[in-house]
Amino acid sequence: MDSTFRPLVSIITPTYNHGRFIGACIESVLKQTYSNWEQIVIDDGSSDSTADIVFGFHDPRIRLERQPNRGPFELAQTYNRALALAQQEFIAILEGDDFWPPNKLVTLIPAFVDPEVVLAYGEPADVDARGTEQRAKSHTTRMRKGLSHSVLFNDPVGSATRYMLLAEGRSLIAPSTIIIRRSAMEKSGGFHYVAGLPLTDYPTFMELSLIGKFYYSPETMGYRRRHENSITVGHARTIHEKVSNFTIDFLERHRDKVELSRSERQQIEENWWDAEYKLHFSEGRFLLLQKKWFEARIHFRATSKSKNLMVRVAAYAGFLLSWLHMNIEPLMKLGGRADLRVQRNSEV
Image (cartoon, rainbow, N blue to C red; front, side, top):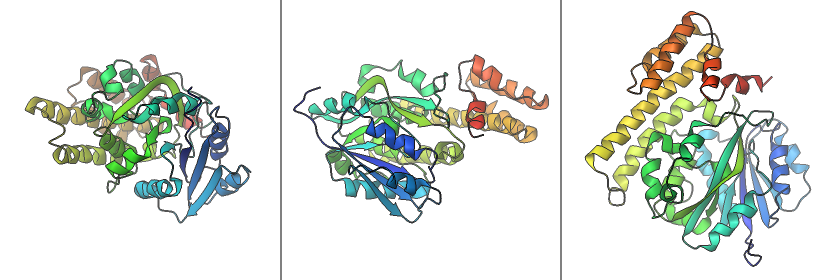
């Protein structure tokens, strides 16, 4: 690393009732081999031991800011409050239930020597509530390995935008892995709020994709916990619906910057419909684990309308297993997918 380029990095850590996880989160920051950072922890009105644990770290680089609970649907406002408190040129995100590898900052910061780079990111790794890494890689991780250099690095600018407009492109960039150039954030309007959407990453990254280039590292740059209390698990359907609506609005607002043919626009719409079927399938899987056999069949029946042959086959298997009062996780594991039982059992 260029020893002359050591800018201060502001780490934004929103947290709510992460008493079990916030200690490991902060420890992972303290273990960074790059030491020029500050961490701003925004406690969204936690009712557990979260604040006490943060206070227990006697490092002047760590600040705790508390606020009345605003909830996940005002997450953008919480992020923007932290952004105003940070006032540094480089912003990293690390939510209170996630953690980093020791080389995260030292790996990504050099990318910003290039003034055209507005965002740097890497590979995420999924872990359960105990912090054990899941062997099966996520669908998004597998997809990313087949993407072109132009998409991964958003070079030329806008290359990643087209991919991110697709449903599977929604998760191209994991928040726990990123560092953002603050001036680009301000140019794009800060962290973007979408009414009814309990996240801010996708809208924000989409806007940034029209401003500058990205930098991508194939190394693991963040560990994200998958547990039943996480936002992505608890609000999966809401997230899908609101992100789909945002995508349509984004296309209309940036029609001059994102030129699409009629067939490309149709492909995007069909892709989001296919994602709807996959969401039904995921809900069916969770319901099988809860032994709600009838409710699971409703979702598998909806999934069977997908144009994707593999999705339809999986739906038929789930439908049959619901009658046999069995779950589908052993089959999913054989197919290389993450076992949902790992997430549930890690809560015990």
